[in-house]
Image 1 (cartoon, helix red, strand yellow):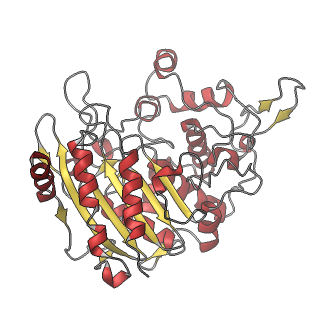
Image 2 (cartoon, rainbow, N blue to C red; image 1 turned 60 degrees about the horizontal axis):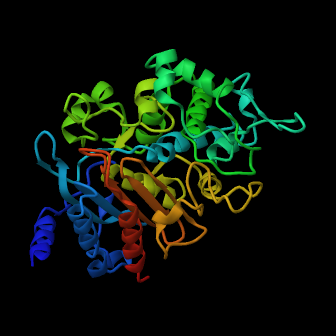
Image 3 (cartoon, rainbow, N blue to C red; image 1 turned 180 degrees about the vertical axis):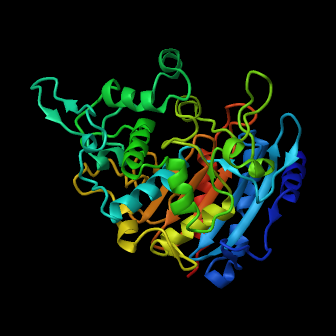
Length: 407
């Protein structure tokens, strides 16, 4: 009885948004009008309530998009529990963590590819001179790392930096030193294209290629050419510094040594401390409404509401596993497709046409390009402390959404 009352209390905090969509946002529609079953979709309430009850998350926002409409948008639980308790709303903005790799870095970089500034097959050292290749320890043969290797995590670069020792050596906010460190000192663990090692350093490198080509910081380029192009109002980098008007909407993350939660600054230490918040591996803040627009654009060939960010052929290439990579790897360009880490897509969405990604803070996106259905889960499992998890919740929600599709 106690659990039933708890679940009911959590569900009372769930807020459905049926207001008219502001300019740049998607319109809302009933699930039935888009070929989905609303009764089945409402089972998401049960799974979120259980995750909150078990202490895995303090709250979250879930959006489901079908074609070019939002068919489900709800806020659950609390946006903040330290220092005060604040209820969640559908407008809440989250630190996307590694989902930034997809919606910020990858979408920006694929624009450069389709406009002829860079090729996926180009060697990285064409854009970052002196970028160290992989060297065969037995023969001494050198194999250059390509752009595609970075974007599919097949470069062999180690996953991360030793943050404390890096900061002691180079200091905070040292992006030039960071890319030098990656180019010259970070270990190359295997021959490119023959293995898979998820690495934040791959996308810091992609960031630097973009910046060297465009002469702009990634944060400026993405906000202008991707987020701005789509008319997004609450998506960008470094809210505390660049967008103070967003701060009332931002969900906090982990409590720091001073007893206050991190707010408006990216949680990822590499991105925040070494790269100054402008980083290819993390740093984008957004909400479900804005991310729904991005998902709809990708499901509709790169454009939505008359605003195009990518061509249809670019979207198809981005979503495919490169043919010259070992097929077991399963990574698309900037997105997961069918790797061992793709469990968040659940059991029912397309095995080959679904792209997805997770973020360390608890965020995730799943986009089935075949059925034109997207699932966005924005949670902050790192608030108030770095514990809990959303793995089971992600997959179960994906199954519920896929199972609700009737036509």
